[in-house]
Length: 295
Ligand SMILES: C[S@@+](CC[C@H](N)C(=O)[O-])C[C@H]1O[C@@H](n2cnc3c(N)ncnc32)[C@H](O)[C@@H]1O
Image (tube, rainbow, N blue to C red; front, side, top):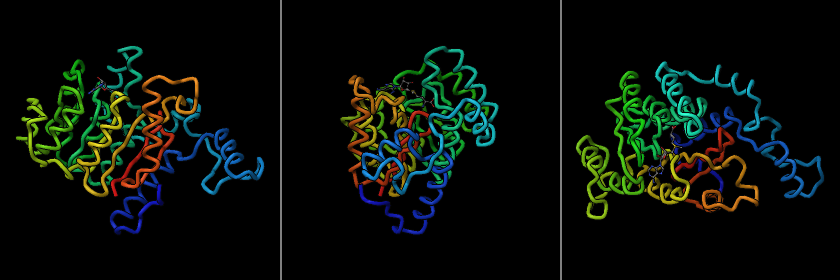
């Protein structure tokens, strides 16, 4: 991938500086052991040699106590965040699907950095990320999910937080919903048509193309490449596609994992590395978050 095009325009450059600061705050360096191994392999100058980007710090391997500290001083959780968290934790094992407090704060901040008017979230679950995104967005958040089991409690919290009016939940396969949004756009009328599930194949038009400032991808891994491609068309230049789970609990570098999800994430990471349509930054935040900026 070519280097970041920060000279493209002052507002874009300013945004990238802010994003860079957020990245640094989130701890944008690989784990110490991996970095050392990488330095030895890539530079061949012995154990002491380190690549220019290397800074020794703890990130995704941080202790619970440090994570707690980061959340305590680095997030501004609303009562509604806490209620959605509480509801989610009571669901048992599947609660792991919910974004973490620091990642939620990250999403809200990213939406504010790009002055988001229109946002698409792929994968709603219990609506925690949706709440964070909506708090950072001025007009509309589409949140797409194949299910709506948790929608009533999510809607209650979005309304209590004063963002419910701006959130459109669309039930169905997200590839189809994204196709509809590309065709129909972000207006209130368009949202009603998208929710009604008009036939994606039959809808002509491109009212939604170039109209979004942020897309958050957080659903089935096999479809990630398709989601990122739709995101590219939905976003305006300078807009962000934030892709979750790109470290996938470390399975991306563990050869014994050859399952479909791991393979899909590995391939996406490799493909994005060379996709010069985007600026790229993979953060070891939560389960790995890749921030793509449309050039
Ligand atoms: C990791 S969770 C999303 C978490 C959420 N973003 C949050 O803030 O907590 C993934 C969600 O993707 C949904 N999903 C899985 N396959 C899907 C598909 N093909 N289309 C749309 N949603 C899908 C699941 O129902 C699940 O709610």
